[in-house]
Length: 362
Ligand SMILES: *Cc1c(COP(=O)(O)O)cnc(C)c1O
Image (cartoon, rainbow, N blue to C red; front, side):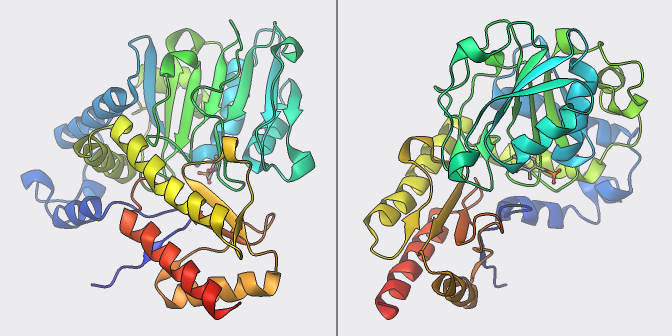
């Protein structure tokens, strides 16, 4: 079996051990004589999968007891509406930091339901940095303060030691593309959501960690399915949940735990990304696009400065088994997404290929 090194930004590579386990359990899960895809979501076997997924996620993320964990549908983007519908309900104000397309989409969607304000933006330099924030510009009476922690397209991140100081205003975070990659203190947040397909499982599932006091204040017009209360009350089984996706997430959690948990993933991701950034910083041909202090551990955009050469690189890399290195259309160039499941050998192979390409195209 030939597998490539898949640098896709999402959906992205999953650990081989997870795929093998899912394959082995495909026809007959745990002696039930059926696959997880075929079983009732009310069955004992699925109830156990869901409970295990929740318990493992809680353990890995260090989620305090005053938070609920939900596995919902609609991907990351549905949260862009669900958050304002549920939380923009006291003063109707929310503050946003615009660090890229995903933050902008969340901001625009919230603007349909209330008074959304951008307190800072890095649009002036193609989102190549995280804006320095001045807490004096935050609205003290906002219902929440929103950030996208890791900016998948532009390769920036709010480090765990660089989160906005929002005081009593709940900090809401999109962690779709860096969930389980680095230790963040959950107690600093009101809500953390993550679409699964970057670092946690298949597309469609979104895991939500929400502080209990933020549940139960939705606008009257909120559709039942978009009310967090509905899903808290039904323990994520109000309707048929994305059963198979949750099962894969559970296998990924088992895998992360076996690696030593999130702190061990963080150490590994720092080593992996540092290798690539060091190479970029010393290359005469390739150059990273993000300021060093805000660099993502997960998404590494880089350019040669020559569009034709970029295209040639992407094409030849693909022939060499290094897939999905084309950058997002708004940035151009290349982007290597090196999520938890990317082994060091994949990064080494990429660096070796870049060295060879540099020599051949001087
Ligand atoms: C991919 C992504 C999303 C959107 O996720 P969907 O599941 O496609 O809706 C949102 N935020 C971030 C940071 C992402 O990387």
